[in-house]
Length: 562
Image (cartoon, rainbow, N blue to C red; front, side, top):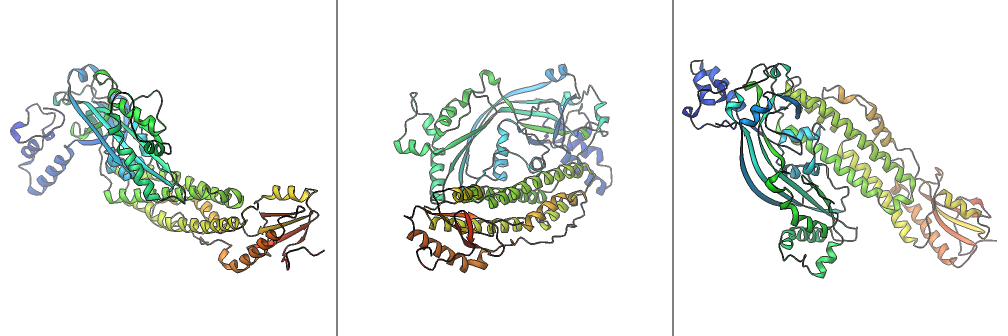
């Protein structure tokens, strides 16, 4: 009987079982004379504990006999229950050949976890930064950086062999002192070997392109890869239209196999896909652990450390949702930062940078809080309420998704206003303060007329609030209450809608005047930003001979008065 420990009836339970309670039917025999209430509790607990736990290896160097701590989801290197000779002699190995190909157009952690067979508990540890993934599992870290990015992923899995410890081996512990150390809760009794690979295909699109159409085309292109790869041996045959679409597709590779060069384009990915079946090598010598089975040490010796409780799936799901919301906010911020107009107006660019930096720091603080409470809950040192408190504090904090998205919405409105103005004044350059000075010092220019945005530079109270919250110690005092006082709202000091009429009037005057004098070589028209609280929104600045002569220039005709 092997370490899987599944028995059909009591007769199948061997006499030399490690402990009678290794088998639920032996457990029944042991507790049959106890009171019904005690028997029921003991039997159910023993039965649940005796079922091995399946877990994705996630690129970690796991093998049969290795000790594992389910509280921290970490393996214990260099320490075993048995000597190497015994493990080799009693290791049962059998072939397990299987190939699987899947496709996914979702970028959520839930979808990625599903492809890698990551259970809820391991997912929580990943969110808390407790698990360092490798190989193909690095795909879990690969998230879209922009909402203007279509993504389709191809997943390839090939298994080669299955190794497991025998029951005989489990009963002959060489180093029993390991139980007293309480550093591990489980032992790996079986491992499925093979290799996995992800090829992530991305296609960016502009505001003018049809998102759904591009995503549909990308889906078709990626799902056609297996078909292309099995055609003749002289390369890939495809239409010119197909080749043209392939030029806009990038590829990122995450795999358990070594490639001389990772593919970065669609065409390179086709070539790699052809070679995947051969990359495990002869006799699968390049195979790695894909999935492992864990057995509780407490069933071998009651002195061993135990996994006291698992965290509820509902709480883990809520934690995942919280992290995903922050990721979505970061993508929106990235998209705004990449807009051309954001690069032109440095004040807005700087606020976006500060906003993004605050979220990055907050995510690290949040991850550290999760890394602290997850092992404590599993080990019995904390209740589940500690994780629930983190969620409550988050949603009452200035970092809740509602407030973050409101700030981004207001910033997007600012950028939209500036974009519409600069497009309307096509052909007129937008200059920073240095560009303005260069124009003023040019001896060939007598007059500079500048459409000036006067309210872009300000101290944003919401960004100050975010920064102050990061300095608080809220997550170290978990009681479900938010001790941080939110003294300011998301609303920005300047609201363009309050001065829309005035700004439109200035735009109209400036455009008419610039069009009427576009052939005048000594008159220069520019757009710039200067902070001026006395003229909220915008104003037309008039410079003559390098000097500012009028902050509220309102041309009454198409020519300058002498």
